Amino acid sequence: MTTTTDIESSRTTGPGPRIHRRPGARIFSTAVAVLAIAVVLGIAGIVVGSGTIHWEIIAQYFFAPVMLNGVATTLMLTVVSLAASAVLGTLLAAMRISGNPVLRTIASAYIWFFRGTPLLVQIVFWFNLGLFLPRLDIAGFTISTNSLITPTTAALLGLFLNVSAFMCEVIRGGLLAVDTGQTEAALSIGMTPRRALLRIVLPQAIRVILPAAGNLAIDLLKATSLVYVIGTKEILGTVQGIAAQNFYVIEMLIVASLWYLVLVSVASLGQSWLEARLARGIGAAQPPAARPNL
Image: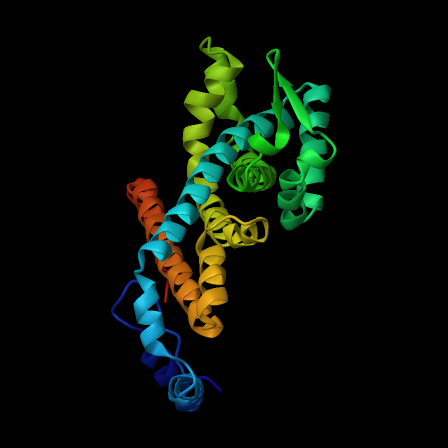
């Protein structure tokens, strides 16, 4: 039975009531935290204290010029593919929400195909395009497909075409989150549908698009590791080549993992910074929540 003393003890001088927690729950939570820390430290001790990992090799190759070139290639693939997928994804999203059934069908078929087939299969397909299309006719010029589709070109095609399908759905979700009254108001003052989309709807949709697009960018950064199968010298391809020469396979994989962790951490911080800047001023525009009557 709840007494007056129990109710008073759960109240604070702050803006709202504080939930009273029993001492037993705190003890259990502390025990779980201590156990988790012990497990993590135990695993770390096994890895570090095994004596089979040559840490000096990791330190030697982490900032090696060949390794930095692989990191630069990974960043290039990520940035170029992300920028191209943002443009194509926006176009596909506009087609998906348009009133033209032909455009909607084309965009839906694109998304169905590129989301339904594995990224690795698409990368290998583009790399082997010359097997069934030996020559390409471009503006009256004939060029060998093998000379045009290099490992880097195949990697970019596979990455940005695949990510564009997912980016389309991210952007479409952000556009649909904007109230239709915004578009109607823009059209009522004489704006064209295209101008209303670019000037009114998109700026408001960015707040919804950014978190999902940021996660997609981080996934793209890690997905670049798949292109090593076609000989592209990004991070994983670089460490595989080094390991084939010095036979320190585990050490080189640790180098690759550390670099991916560094890049993903920087990307996550950048995403958080952008989200904070976009959210600036939103809280001030909202009325404060009403305090509960106690």
